[in-house]
Length: 138
Image (cartoon, helix red, strand yellow):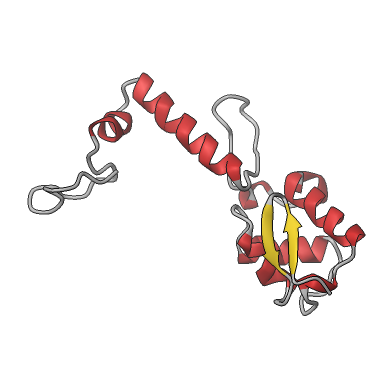
């Protein structure tokens, strides 16, 4: 029984149940982890350290290609990507990279949100009259 597993460049605790251990991977929440376990036919009560190499590889393929395993599009975290127009599921470092690209695209096209990011002001419609004078928050 391994105490720490390495799944998709993320250290996963092997002492807790599989469904909760998978939530340590960015882009995988509790509901998605639960669905991964069901699609991979892994017991939800099993510990993550008890998984074999075969099970870990199955989990990796499900996370990387969720649509091949009949996971619905509304479960995927990036619908209609701006570049490809396809539905993708982003994990780990991909989330940060695409978020940065989106902000840069908004700045370049001079969208209102992009300009607020550029100026270091609040983006989501918060009031700025009385709060946030000292440090500008993104």
